[in-house]
Length: 167
Image (cartoon, rainbow, N blue to C red; front, side):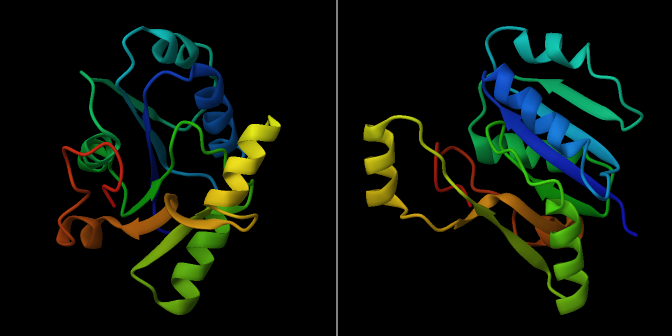
């Protein structure tokens, strides 16, 4: 199997970042490494990484505020694997996400497999907003995507300098 780096940009949200990292370390096929690009203004992400015990290398880079696309590009650049998987710090993957996307990529000879994000809401207002915006079905998204490193760089990477829509 080819090596896979999971790139996770983060800007605060230490508790969900921890859940995301733990979900990555519990995949049915494990990544070769996690690349965390931290734009947080505090040390909460680096502090939580101190307490994670794993044999999987975690590459951590603390940076001045980067937009998500810029952070993903940096993570891709410093990664060491043939395949790149992208998550966000608040995107907690299913335990078979990596295996499913890898199998889909290989079985269909695809260059990229896009992620599917299921948005969740807590309050009734959030639920109404979610229903109006996305409905109840998963949405194709950058988080959860898998692409070969070569094709990622050939594509020109993510657009930089924008807060959203970088993909």
